[in-house]
Image (tube, rainbow, N blue to C red; front, side, top):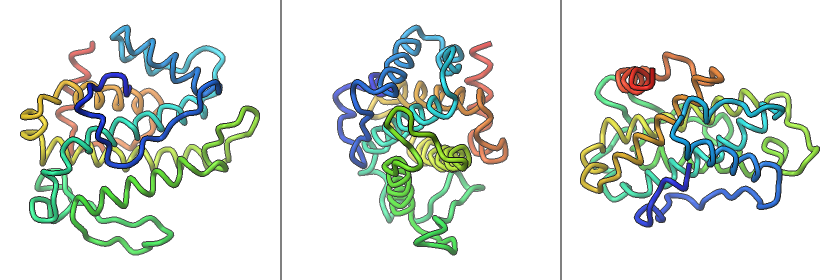
Length: 216
């Protein structure tokens, strides 16, 4: 949750996406923050009693976007066209960008360019009221779950890039506790609702197993 971050992290990569105060989604976000504060992340990700699954996934997806936005915002000076000429997560995993609309054929590009494309694309989805309705009573579209899964799959790639290519910088900035807590929360959430295919998680599989075993 965003409340985990200190003042250092007020620099975001893209503008923060706010959930309107007074809305039901804002109340859900506050509930999530309160349960997160208890320190039990497995319990914090569970669907609260009586709540709509789509709405719970929507609120948390917005929050993960804001968290990754802040985390990447702290290391942008180290993630450059020169240092990260390709978007990768270690030597075995390379990502090429396509959004199916503006860029239909996957293109090879630098990590900062890829992450800019990615975060802009996510922002556009979150701002689309037909996909992420913020008003009470407006239903979620039939394709909501598949869109949410694509968003989370792509956001995972930013975590994977940070861990593989920039963890030294994260440690220098003393942000590793924030990164680890944020990623653990993210992984527990996607595992709880089976939102990302296991193969997509392969670049950080060892870390995921380590985080999970500490919680058993």
